[in-house]
Length: 116
Image 1 (cartoon, rainbow, N blue to C red):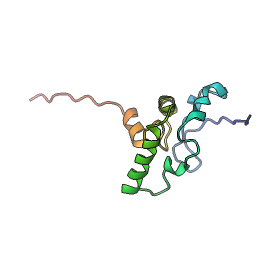
Image 2: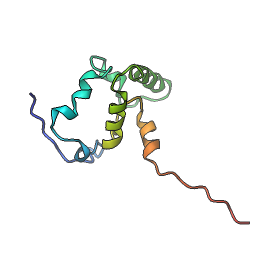
Image 3: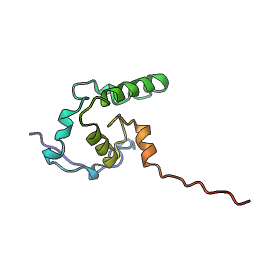
Image 4: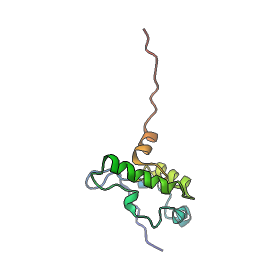
């Protein structure tokens, strides 16, 4: 079994966002076994995580490919729940891109009628 080091961090040394590891379920293997069944296992990680500076159609195509792999995944729900629970800042998780997850995190703004 691998030794796992749990760190509390919200930003990297370069000031970039990182997953909030304080929200992770802990080092109990039973809580992580779902990852062994992921359709993404064995796939190139670059399908799920963008290279620096990737934009436009290249990014959209990569995300679409990642989501198509996720669509066949037997643990899609667990992956999505994990990504939302720990606020994964990077990659496609549970068929959700970074932008998809940010839209879920964003507070819903109530539209009020303008008095006139």
